[in-house]
Length: 255
Image 1: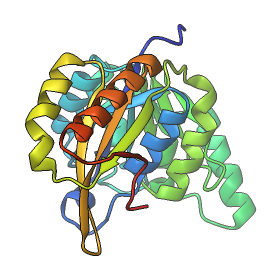
Image 2: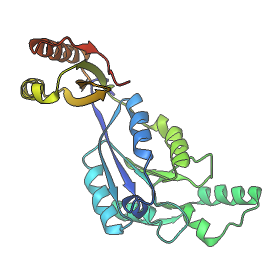
Image 3: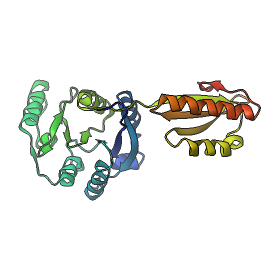
Image 4: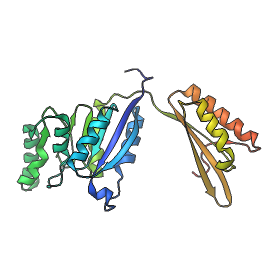
């Protein structure tokens, strides 16, 4: 794959517990950071409920739009863990017990002294054509079907699943960033910054005010895959700030 191609991803965080506030998500940040390192850019993330119709519709929408889709949540042993069934429905395939997954879980519970209950057997069900994603911690696998990667919602388990499937992912151009800061209010530079963004649509430009003691200012963060254009824009931002009578600096003064 060319290193100039932008490879995109969407993350679906599935679970009523996230929407209700009972569980605070920590998976999105980990996934986005991990993927960014290998040249996969998260372009969208959604939190959706444990409703089959919603999961099916959302998944079919985003898997057609992005190179990869990563889901978390809903593949445990309880009745409300419906993600695997919904994914199978989205792909128009059946779902059944995967022999390798059944053996993996059976061996795990035999070794640990746990009972391999009917409920736990649910975690061995995979859509037809899916391949397992390894789970070194609790053994219950995630799975990949097409460009969709289905992982656990428990952060530690999700993390080892993501680590184990990294070799399957093909990254593209790595996103780079530059930061220019100055002691100036973002409202002062907003109009000129908007003009600069319009001239450089391939560079993402974000404006972030900061306060440190009695000092306030603005950090302008620029992100792009083209380092040459990124340097040009950073230079223009610095010159723009000098035009307002302030001397810019490289880096974030709040760190």
